[in-house]
Image (cartoon, rainbow, N blue to C red; front, side):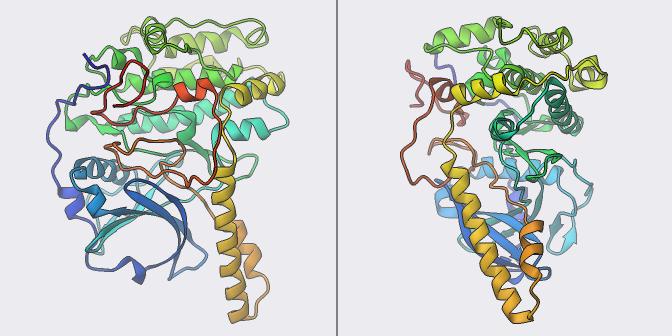
Length: 421
């Protein structure tokens, strides 16, 4: 029986979310679309500027309807989840009933538009880059830093769970820093595989193998606890730089996860507090009933108290991150350079037209960059609507990274070599 082949047995998603896209106003009336930041099988992401306020910048995800045909349900699901966490959603110029303020650590969807051939999602931009990249770049990194990062993630996911949403694909690539500032907050992105509890029982084996919970692999019905397991895996990696589960053989890898078979190896964990290890054990508990909830995790002394150590562990962690999660930086560099060039042109144009020399600095300072859902390689058969980064050169990836690539299509199956078929 194929491992990743079981479908959700939930209610059929209605087409309400796509019907409610703004069809009355063309997106070009409100936004100026600039350079392409990323492309994928179904969509592209472009930098956009508000016509009303040129200092406001966004990422616009543009989805081709023709390419989307047959996969509308996944897009409806993603839009519905994003709307649940976004403030001031407008439908035909009016606020959607029940609109609420979102959580500060969740990337927002601001507006949606539709024309004859495309669907447009206007989303928040963030500029700080991915979680692991920032840690490697830091000169100092402590257990307390890791604790602060996990606290932010837990607070955001606790909010999601309270609102009845399970992310189902929490991993470092979906955790972005809001800005390059040292004290920038973490933002959760990529809700393509998220599910609302009111949409029915969750049983689909989906997500990224290295971060997926045992009950998902066991093809059992599951719920919010799968996100807590993933946070446990992320916590483990943040403290040592390598994944808790790894094997060249897929069957062995899945067996490790199903058993919760992980260790705190010496010398990598010698300087890590017992409180941190206790915290991780409670999050990566195979027994779902005994596994912590987000609220329980937030109350743990490693998060809420002073149990996290202050020793600099940057050298060990960064070395292991580079070894086990080696990702080419050219993709992010390409996107960042594209945005900067575009903003410089915009700033120069603004300066020439207004005669004010200070606009360029302010424009670059206030810019926010995020390419939603774009950080990992994805299959063309992905039933969620995602965007892949532009690929212009050959790269090499570590075996551990290959194991942690997403199995993103709810209906895709794995053959013996771990490849989608």
